[in-house]
Image (cartoon, rainbow, N blue to C red; front, side):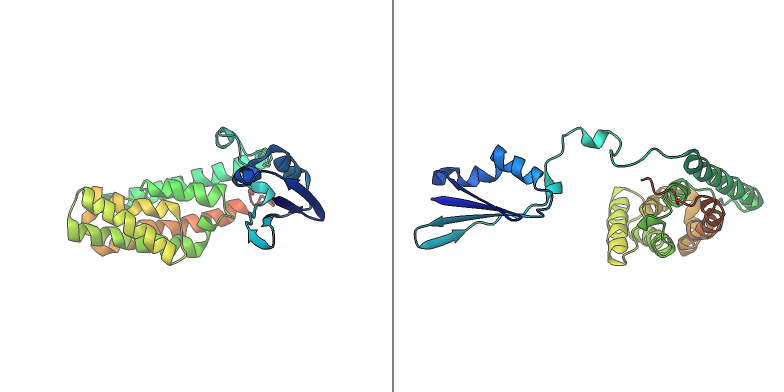
Length: 237
């Protein structure tokens, strides 16, 4: 039985017992050939016997080589170390954002409401540290914030407080973000915050606009001031 390997313009004919064909792709010399053929994007494997042809095609990219198990525990080798500017401006922007929201909290304190809720810390991380990421798009932010907050209110009104409301709300929030193509990870915590936060229950469906979406308007205005000084837009993630 002949087994023919096609890699770019190179053709190699190898004859092996039929039982070894399933493991051919893991054969070390072929793996070496795959890694050495920089111009080859795919590898095709074809088996033939007599006049009847049986085809087995394995398509693989050169980037699909199994990575060491510890690769995910170290910094990306292809990323460069952030500059001082890329560290300073996001940090300064986050400080300014929380300071402004804190001052607004002082004005709203007599009404018993607050603009500084925990998910806004994650929003700051997305906006200031990775402003070019999909999660930092204005569409993603506001659609996800409003929709997920409303889902939290609806789940609480149907199931009341407890694990069922939290589970249903989080599941529905993820489905909503994926369906609307507005994935914004910090918004997933808004339903849980409402269900577990008794001081927010009086807001009812106003919670979909305040504090999440309202605070994000302020954050988007601030980030426009702190992202512009860096020409690289912090693209080191």
